[in-house]
Amino acid sequence: MPKVSIIIPCFNEERRLKKEPFLQFLHSGADVVLLFVNDGSTDNTLLLLEEIKKISPANTVILSYAENKGKAHAVFKGMEHALYHNDSAYIGYLDADLSTSLDDFLQLAVIAEQKQADYVFGSRIKMLNHIITRSGLRHFCGRVLTTIIDTRYQLAIYDTQCGAKLFTPAIIKIITPTPFKTRWLFDVEIFLRIRETRKPLKGLEIPLPQWTDPGNSKISLLSIPSVCGELLQLIKHYKRPK
Image (tube, rainbow, N blue to C red; front, top):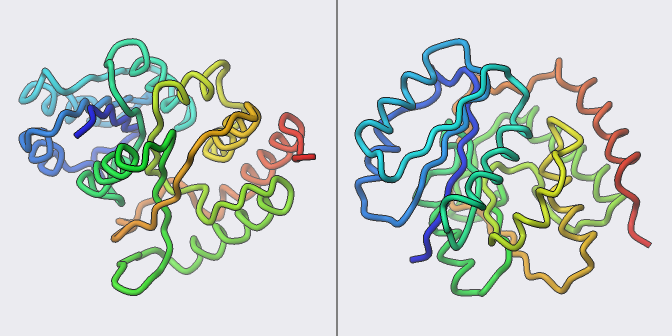
């Protein structure tokens, strides 16, 4: 099993973040580092994270920032830290609500090692014997967004926005020369930055066996204007393929 650093961005996760699954995972013996990034939370999120670290200090890291700057910033800072401090074979990120389970995420690392992939990411594809539970509205909005992005950039990726991705340190170096331009669409930026290298890199999109939306998402219909603005930012900063 390769050593894996798992970045978990957290903003006001007091109600969504459950300690028990993280503690059980840490006690499983897996060679992992949980890197929690407290993104300016104003509730008791930091207290919860400190309780986890107290029980398993060797495998838990907390980065805490006073100001909320968004998931993109939290993931970026987590990547920088893991790259230079954790000596991991793979570095990835996962949502704090564990809509993708820690065990399923670790299985992505196993697949990456077996297939000698440079990066691997989960995909919420409804298939026989796969349990994907999400609201119809979010699924519809996600498909529209993916269609728009693929029309311009031809990434040929079914699910760019699933919050379960991991990369080799070499890919992290490609991803993090500068901060992301967007807050909501940084996942797309990651794929665009990887492609801009024009190197023969191996990426795998793996259908997740289970993904469950626990609700209370920070993305809503009110986010649509911001997402549309970020699409324009992508168009400005990233050229379509020739």
